[in-house]
Length: 218
Ligand SMILES: [Zn+2]
Image (cartoon, rainbow, N blue to C red; front, side, top):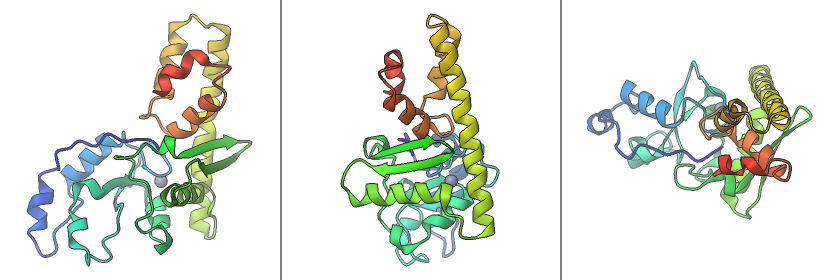
């Protein structure tokens, strides 16, 4: 999970739909703006290029019982169905980091090592602890066949992303003056790239080897 800059202007359909008894919070303009602001990634697992995105309410509305949350633009997030489903558990209610307000990278450490994902809180706050647990589950909670497949898919995509990063880093070490590799690294380490938290976490952990890349973590 990385910080997201949300467009402050709510998509127009939200105000219109809010007036209806069974209005929709996921019309095309909402999806489009969320997709753009989230760089087409699930805000929880950071899988990119979602073919089946959903709109998630960060603070749950409990079957529209908390009406003001349903159409609140600041409460809507771009998510994959797998993570949306995992987050439905009551233990996460009102306990997930609002990554449009707070910077999750200052609260969590996300690592990928030897085929495994490790997410830890680095601040002692309930939302950091619970968000770390949710992200961990999005890669490793295999209690059903569907979830096992979804987790494996995310681990495989993450492994691919990391191995591309390692390759560019290797080339960069051999050719430190090459602008081409710096350009690739700038993109790979930007918040908009898929699994950015893991890639940025890797560089942060090995910053002694890559002091010249610190500027890309800003
Ligand atoms: Zn996801």
